[in-house]
Image (cartoon, rainbow, N blue to C red; front, top):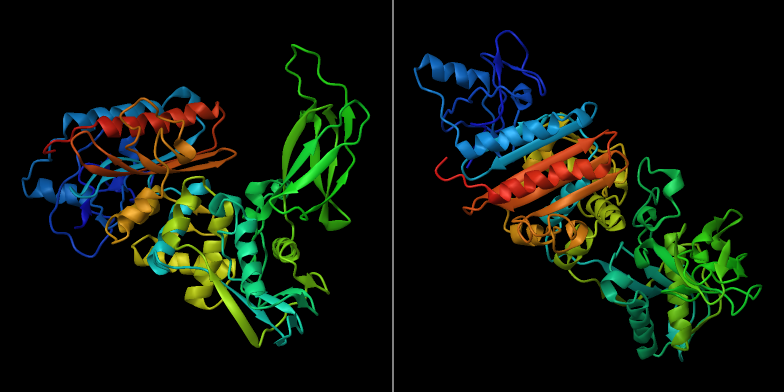
Amino acid sequence: MPLLASSSSVAATSGSAATSGSAATSGSAATFGSSVPSVRAPRRHASPLSRVVRAAAAGLVLLVASACGAARAAGVPSPRLAPAVVELRRTVDSMVAAPQFRSAQFGILVVDPVAGDTLVSHNAGRLFIPASNQKLLTGAVALQLLGEDYRYQTTVGASGPVVDGELRGNLVIHGTGDPTVSDEMAGDAMAPLRAMADSLAARGVRRVTGSLVPGADAFPGANLGFGWSWDDLDFAYSAGVDELYFNEGFARVIVRGGATAGDRVSVRTAPARSVPRVQVWARTTEPAPVGTQARRARTLTIRQDSSDAATVIVDGHIAAGDSAVLTITHRDPARAYLLAMLEALEERGIAVEGGVSPWRGTSPYVLFSMVSPPLAEILPAFEKPSQNQIGELLLRTLGRARAGVGSADSGARVVRDQLLAWGARPDGFVVRDGSGLSRHNVVTPETIIRVLDAMRRAPTFERFREALPVAGVDGTIANRMKGTPAQGNVRAKTGTLDMVRSLSGYVTTADGRLLLFSVLANNWTVNVREVERVQDTLAVRLATLRLGGR
């Protein structure tokens, strides 16, 4: 059923162009859809929201001043807004017009998709940096085009035959970007690799005369997203991706101080013991005085060795008897995977004479394949914790599966085409990566609502909805909206970058109506909690809303 923006905050101004963020021209209409089953004239709403002329949602038909003019010409009175909606708009108007947000930008859209009503619209056609709200687009398109049963396949082959326990040639690992070889999804990232080593041993392999090498380049192009900040690249959330991908692209380095000041500092890595190599420059110092809260471990730093991409340096001070866990990204994701695989082989008693080689190999002898859990299980691990690297892998997977090239650019084109197929306006988004880490992504609240509504109408809706964080319960909003009617009700995706906060998803009203909402905020100068307060207040109000018969 098409949605009608019958009660959006719209003002009609004769002689002006109908553009987002300006008054609507009498006699013009902005439409979202191919047919208009009925006409509902929008009521004038004298508030900051009334300056917005385009309120949109997935599958909706937006009628502005022309509908209003037609209704007046026909003598049809404007529909009366429910008091709950009037009060909701006043609340939103008051929040976004607060003096502390004078220089901030908010984009807000709330839609009742079944009734066909737009309840709130503010800058809904403006472009905003979405941060991790980009994951809504990536996840929705992946579920739509790959399907909930899609599984990644990793194939193990050989360049030569296996004779008397000896694999005569290279052992070749052909990856396709399986994101589940991680502590988060497998419990222990080494477990899938050990299972592969067990399969080789079961086939009688005890020795490899060649090297352990990567197979075909399934994901050509850069490992990092477009425009990612260079000074974030050591942090786990900015890890690069490749067709061979180990433990979300990062390692833990556990550092322990010696027994007394001056003693040697010890380190170990996890989940693989051999990845990465660590140079220890840190020193053990005297413990912090009893009764103080100083933690000498906090002076520790970890960084990449500029002369060797496979080595990291731990520097600084750590108190005697203290310990700390540091994280660092793998600058070469495929090599990290192969080094961890080599460790698993050695644990199983399989020797690889040539060690790990970066040179890609072919494998006329296919030994076996390992398949991942289905996309239906991967999606919650992507959306709830807002895991960036799964987004980048899904983007490249879409490019490979639907366009034949596993690059980020190819995947972005696939996402773009699907958004257009769902009715998004061509000027309503720009896709640069799959995670939202790039500040070059932009999207309108209209586009996000279109995606949410497309998924609402899809057979996989419950899969998609249940993958989202739940207010006050789990994911990135586990500690937000606790003790309110939104807790356990709101399912929404956050987005977080410097000067960017987003919250978009689904909420059920007190009288059982499912609403779609998107709140995007960019460029403020106040404490970020004030921005989140606007988002949370709106979500809670929607959860308590009673629309009745409207």
